[in-house]
Amino acid sequence: MAGDAELSRIGISLPKHLLDKFDEIITMRGYSSRSEGIRDAIRSYITHYQWMSDVKGERQGVITMTYDHDQRGLLQNILDIQHEYMTTIQATVHSHVTHDRCLEVILLRGEGSELKSIAERLMSQKGVESVKLTTIPLQD
Image (cartoon, rainbow, N blue to C red; front, side):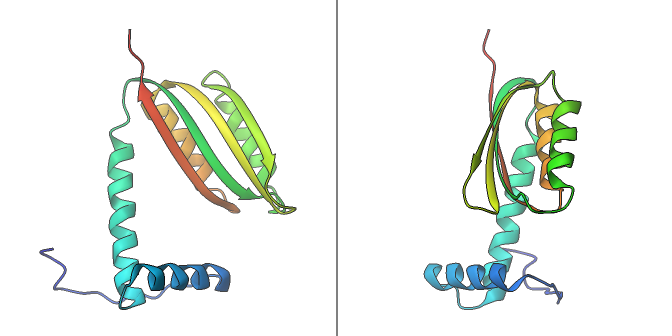
C-alpha cells in the first residue's frame, strides 16, 4: 500500500442513521477505527468505478435501485431518466419495501457506456440510496 504513508485529513457530514450503520459494520468486520473502514470503503468504491468504466460494447444488463419515494421530485426525475432512455430500457419492476422505501429493477439492453450512463444518472439523484449495475456482453 505505497502512498498510504502520506495521509490527508478530511471532514464529512453524514446522517446519524448512516453513521450508526457504518459503525456497526466496521465493528463486525473488526476494523480498529472509522478511518480504517472509510479507507477500505473508498478503495472498494474506486475499484467498482474502474470496473464500471470497462463496460463497453453491446450488453444486456440490470440495474437494482433502492430509494426513498418521499424525496421531493425524485419519482419524477427517475421517470424522466427512464423516458429519456426508453429505447435501451426494456422493462422495470417496482416493489414497495416499506412505507418509505422502494426497490426498482430495470432491465436494459444496449451499448455498455449508455447502460453505465443510466446507472450513474440514477445514482446521482438525491434520495436514491443504492444503485447496482450488472451487465453481460451479448454473444452472436
